[in-house]
Image 1 (cartoon, one colour):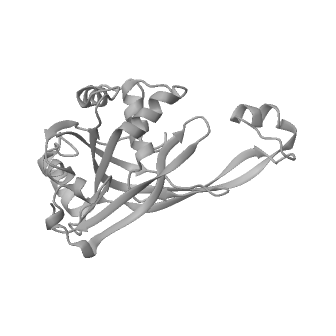
Image 2: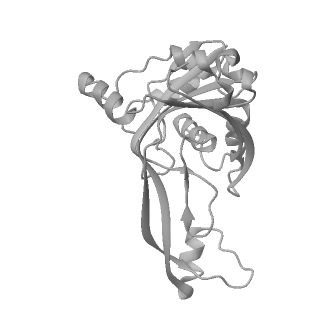
Length: 257
């Protein structure tokens, strides 16, 4: 089966978790909605093209290998916003500033980021998808819109280095992926940085959707380290900012796959 793999690294990343009030938490690794949003930006899909975003989230299967979840960083800042008026809802930031200008106040907002996080992503396509894996790889090499790691304030700091491989499951696909160093110009320093700073404990956390068998090496898994959970990060409506649950398997190992 064909897989597309690429790397995500930056000084800051924020993988949106369920938001309550002014707090905006981050998952410890890449979410599907964020990754497919990055793919959509690379392909030039606009925000209002809802059906295209939904197809990206539903028709491609994703796994990730998290080498460093990064240090947790919490940012406090103020936001100007109007208070509520009965059941009236402001539908856009412009509505808040124009319609609600006489009710504007200051809200303290808290947002979480991951500093120096490093992950690899693997995508597998169903039959009849709108874009082949080759087309997505080309888009990641020459993106149409700016790419970022969950928030616009979190730029990429290393080449995505997309590669296509043929493998029997996500585990073998990750094993075949051979990205260049984070800094191709300073190759030796880059290797030390990845080994000594980003991957200090030499452990990797694999996350994938679908079935346990999709990892491709069930017999080698230490099931005491296998965790299943529900994560609300599959886009259900881009316009209404709604996300559907998906079942995720987590597997951590120090020996690679």
